[in-house]
Amino acid sequence: MAEVLVIFGAGASYDLINTKLNDYNPGFQPPLMKNLFDNRFDGQLKKFGLIQNSLQALRNFSSNGGNIEKYMEDIKEKANRNPELDRYLLEIQFYLQLIFHNINLIFLVKIT
Image (cartoon, rainbow, N blue to C red; front, side, top):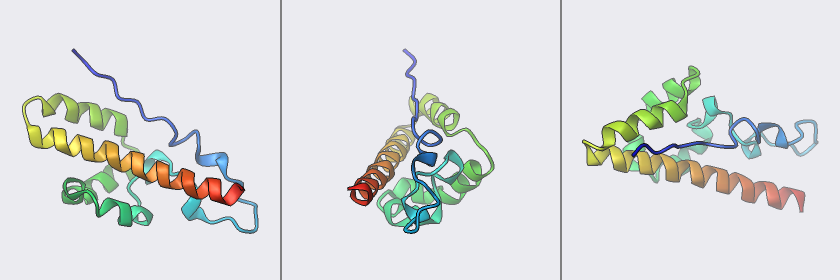
């Protein structure tokens, strides 16, 4: 049975922060898809060894307009034959959850 993976928020939340505010910090702004693996997330990326092994390829793929959902769907199809790819896919999912969680916490602190 096919599974569907959808990532919400990369584009929808990008404009959430008013860039005209005096205390605007681009580090608090949710990333666009092309920025999901930016250097500003290196601290979080270090927690995921399998992502580290392909980090430059991921950065090139996403910064060149690659569709991360399609990329993850392709990995999911291949993962049925390769448990290492399944772990890699899980790392990407946990990484994305972590960066958006951290950005949300920072944003909540800034507006309260």
